[in-house]
Image 1 (cartoon, rainbow, N blue to C red):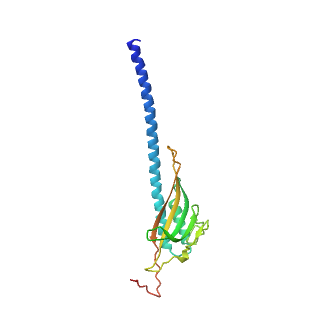
Image 2 (image 1 turned 30 degrees about the horizontal axis):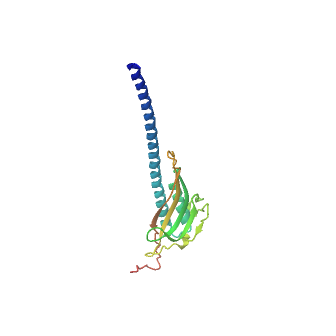
Length: 194
C-alpha cells in the first residue's frame, strides 16, 4: 500500500470512531438532561404536595369541630393540587397526631379522588365516605389549653414524564400538623392547668 492510501484509510477509521463516540456521548447527555428534568419536576411536585398538606391542615384547624370540617379540608387539598398532572393522590388521612406528629390513634381516611361536591365547603357533601371513620369532626377537642392538633397525611404516586431509565413511578406520603383553633365559651372562663 502506498503512503497516501494508508493515510486515507486511517482518516476514514478515525472519522467513524469519532462519529460513534459522538453518538454515545449524545445519548448519555440526553439521558442525563431528561433524568435531571424528571427529578426537578418531582421536587417541584413534592413542594406542591407539602403545600397541599399544609393548606388542608390550616383549613382543618380553623374549622375545628364543625361538621363540614373534612369537606372543607379536602376541598383545600384538591384546590392546591388542581394543576398537578404528574401526581395521583391515593389517600387523604385526617388524624389525631401524637407528640412526634405521626398518627397516634383515631383518624378519618378518604380515597384520593374524594372531592367536596358542593360549591360551598361549609355546607358540602363528600363524594366518597371515609374508609376509616374513627375521628369525626364532632369529636375533635377545641377546648382552650387542652385542644387537639390535626394532622393531614397525603399518600401519592408521582409518574415520571420521560422515564429515561425506566423508573416509572415513585410512591410516597407527606404530612402536616397544626393545632386546632380553640373555641372560648363565654359562660365559663378557662383556666390553665399547671
